[in-house]
Length: 402
Image 1 (cartoon, helix red, strand yellow):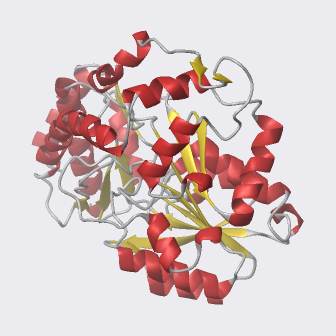
Image 2: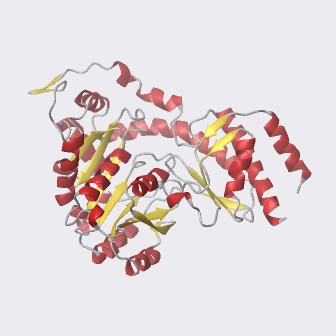
């Protein structure tokens, strides 16, 4: 092994760093962009509605219309909720598990859901909670590997749906093409007319570089006659404040009835004051776009720092994604060394997302995929963290090849 690399790693350990880049959280400077919400005056009366009281279970009209504008979906198909797109996703999965459209998933023998990988660890944890088997399909440059998707459906029974992040996919950043989405719809609806498509569009407005155009999912769903099979969610968790924004769901037919049913049991009413506050802050989707351009200016340099550090690695060591939006970078090593890299980073005081986290059950079959989240720390900390990460890769790779 190169003694120079070992010496450098030991020097990094001696710095006694304490840097955490495990989660894709906004930097404080991004949160500052929405500070006006903290002091905004809100008239508690909106027409005949007292926003301080119970009522409006689907959200106030202004908030639902904002969601309609954002998702390009009909107003009557929109629910404005709270917290995050993940919470609405969980509620929809719960509704299908307990009640289903034709049959409750809990009453099926071994229900399954397709999960493109690498993917979002919290999606996997959710499905594992319900005992729903996760079938994996690879993500390629323009979306889901369609041949693999067909094979999965041909060889499995009780596949109930597909759950994915279609724009700036978490963690590798792919943007599904319109054609890929159309093919996904056609392949899966031919498998079952009761199939559930759940699109967690958490990064719908999170471009920080020019991104290929993507037709709204609701429009493609209308064209492919699957509106009643499609659920799309998004939120302001990384637009305004984490856990303090709004979430939106577009759903039709029985799925809309199901989400109304489950929320009627678990949510007494939404936070209408917060909804009004946000609709005063954002009048329409154009206001959101302008706000997100400010986020982009803060996020872009973070990714550039990470890219500069990773660029010294050669292709015989590994490759990494260069997303045009979202919050993550994916590193893929040639050797099965992801677990070892995480271990070495921890030794040097840098915490990264655990190996295996981007796969169901925490098991990466090749032990070679890692997720980086460069946004939360300041520039100097990120440079130090990336220095540790790249050095750990070099050491782990040298160990693997002997």
